[in-house]
Length: 101
Image 1: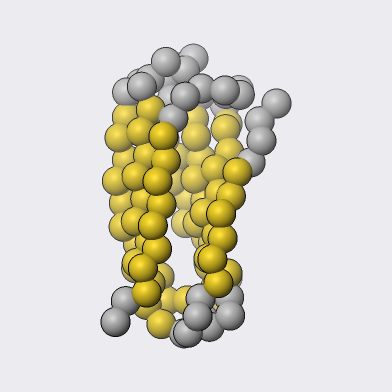
Image 2: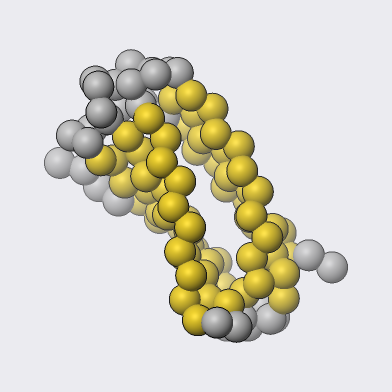
């Protein structure tokens, strides 16, 4: 069984935030195993979702940076979940968010 992990921050002010994401996997998972990372936030248009899928059955590195216009008091969340039958395949993840000047 897979457990979803997540981390959240609250936007201090309405403005632009840069969310940088780094993920890697050695590729030791079975065919079809993936890690889905979901980024959710609220902009002036309402709730938004960004989804990044990383295969776990081949060696992978994913590096992405997203500019997010987040509304003050809203939550920016990064969560991960296994899919495709994966339950404990190894991976690394690091996410950083910076309020832009």
